[in-house]
Image 1 (cartoon, rainbow, N blue to C red):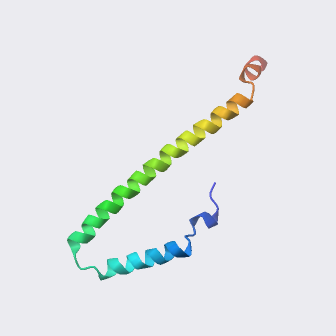
Image 2: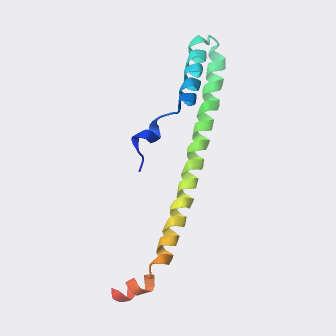
Image 3: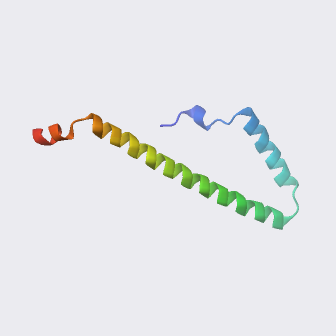
Length: 79
């Protein structure tokens, strides 16, 4: 389903991650780190949920189109 290149980030995103990593390493405020980790976790969970919902809809759409293209009654009568 996925290709190796799908997991490779663009140079812009790699740079952004380096900046974020540096900010985290230099941060000494534990409360700020905890707050940002909570925000990050919530965002990740929401994005995962949105991706799951999108994929379910797309798979349902594709299967419905597939079923419409084949003649179900023909298959059932052959059985």
